[in-house]
Image (tube, rainbow, N blue to C red; front, side, top):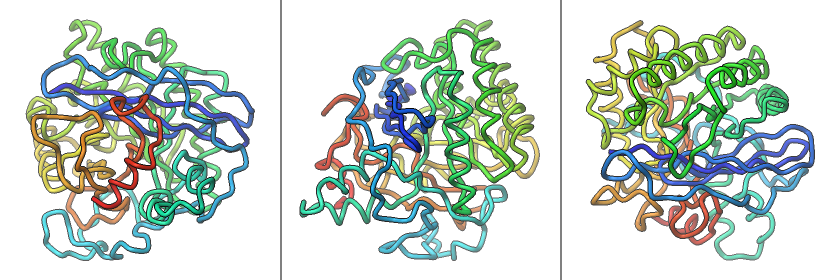
Length: 394
C-alpha cells in the first residue's frame, strides 16, 4: 500500500489554527501565531492500493480563513467521551471492557484538548439554521482533534505551538500535535514540501520543541515519513531516520511530559515485521514512546489494534511502548479495492479518548479531521457539510 499525505492550511489569528485535507492524512488543523496573516502548506493524504505514488493533489489555496476570535459554542477541552457516546465504550474487539480498565500504559488519564478554531466549528457557527448543524456539531465539531504544523515557517513555529499547549494547559487537557515538515515529504507527490533539507528540519523541530512546555502533550511525528520511505535512496532514508530519532529526543527533552509516536502506516499497508524493521532503523524504540497507525485512513479499530500490537511485538524495546490509532473515519471500515480518496459510505469511528480499555493502545485519536476532503470531491482540506453529515449518519 502507498502512504499518502494531507494538505493543511495555516490560518492566522490570535489563536487561529488551520485545517488540512488529503487522502491518507488530510484534513487537520494547524495552530498559528498571534498574527492575522494567512499561509498555506500541504498535509498528508491517504494511501492508494499500490505503491508508492499518490494521485491526489495538495491544496493549492486555503479554505476560508477561520475567524481570529471565533464564537465557540462548546468548551475548548473535549471530554474523552462526549454526549451521545458511551462513557465506558466497549473495546474495539467487542469485549465490553470499561474504558478505565486495560488503559494503554502511556498517554495518561486526562481529557483530550479541542482547539476551538476549526473549519467545521466555523461552519456550524455560520449556519445555525441548517438542519444538519446540530448533528455535525455534536458528532464532529465538539470532538477533540489533532492540530497540524505543516508549513516550514521557523520564525513562527515556536509561538504557534505555544499557543496550543498553553491553551490546553489552561483547559487541563492534552493536545495532539502533528509535526509534518520532513524534507522530501510524500515522495514528491500530492503533499510534497517540507523543510528544504535535514539541517533546516532539525532547526524547525528544535523551535517546535520550545513551544511544548512542561504539560502533557502527544506528538504525532511525521505521518508517512517511515512507512513511505522506500521511495528514498538508502543513504537518504538512513539520513531521514537519523533526523527523526534526533527529533524525538529533542521533543522529549524540551517537553518532559511529551509523548512522541512514530509512523507505522496501517494494517492494509505494511506487514508488521516490515514496519517494525523500519521503525527500528528510525530509533522508535530508543527515542519514542510508541507508534501511530491509520492516520487519515479507514481500517477498523480492531484491525488496527491487532496490527499495532503485532508491530510493537516485532519492534521490541521498552515494555512501556504503546500505540495510538486514528479512528476519525473508520466506523464502517475501509472501502473495497483500497480506495482512499473521499470514498462514499464511510462513518465516524470511536470517539477520541485516552482511555481505550485496550492493552498497549494508549489512545484513539481523530488525527484526520472528518468532513474535510481528501482531494477528489473538492480541493484537499476543503470542509464539506455534505461529507461531514454523511459521516455522522454513517
